[in-house]
Length: 87
Image (cartoon, rainbow, N blue to C red):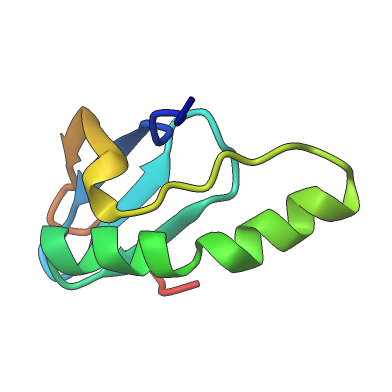
């Protein structure tokens, strides 16, 4: 029997020049980029590195198979002075 791919709740923090996306239930798994579509792709691309860190501590990580596994959580709009650094 095939398993459904995991769905991952993400939040977005939208700043003037950068958008940050983070996985709500997976602390430390976040990325920043210029727009929403690009930041979700960056978060998805980063998943193997995040999985390796968790594997070292023997924590199971249900890595999504595509960005379509991300679903919206909360969207926050940064203030004018709010800036993100690319990690």
